[in-house]
Image (cartoon, rainbow, N blue to C red; front, side, top):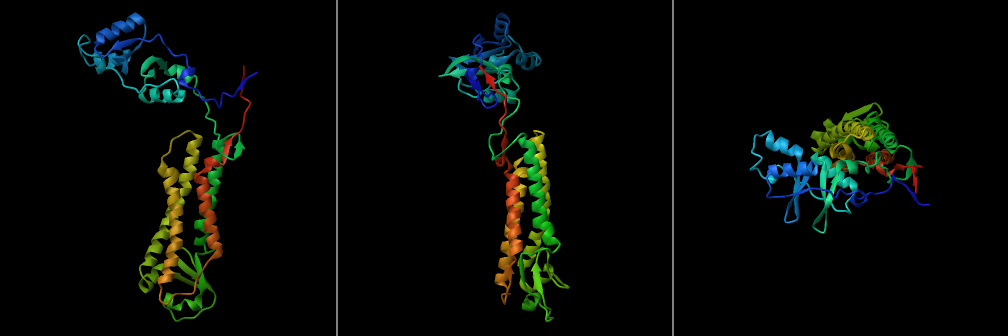
Length: 334
């Protein structure tokens, strides 16, 4: 007994019942000649040939729209003026490829050519029955019953966590990018007031115990690098919000089979990750060029959380690689 899993079989044009009772017309024929042949054969389409080379297909609806409706003379107009051009398929072409060509042109027939010779035509109705209603997702690690639903929730949770970890926590002072002791940073802040405790360099400002210095105050003292840091702090905040909504929107669109562009799916989230990386680099550059160089260290917690946030965003972007369709029992026994 042979078992065929129709959900995984790739069908080709040769699997179709190719209509070899097709009609052809020479490229030198007139519209009237084509119409007479359609009536004689009882077909709505004719393949247009020139020395056995397929040029296109002329359909009765094309004659009506392009010739009759335009008031052109069917006795003098050539079939080439009304035919549509469609790239032929071969017997080894996937059925979904033949279907896509007809769907994109909104036509009913595509010629089937093998070794340069016309074998017949495939209709969109023939192909439709071989197009699966559901595309099986075979790429991924975790088998689930509904990959689109799982990918949506996975990406949503990852993006929300990444936004909270990478943006919200440093904004409220849970961690920073770099840290140091207040007494060692007097020259950086341009103050003679000595206080104890540590200072965390986060978004927009440096914070300590009863001590807040906006980065805008450091621009005149330590150069324009601090202005760049402020700009990237805004960019991280803006693109963090945008990436959160873009990832959730892309996942929801996938659930509803709505196409989304690469800007929403990839560019915005990747820019958020890129800006976060650049922010770390900018802090390092700012401290390296400061005179005298302040004794600061990387905030270990902040660095670890930033890495985790970046990985969460990348996981949300490439969510397709985490889930695959469960094997089902929809098999045909023959």
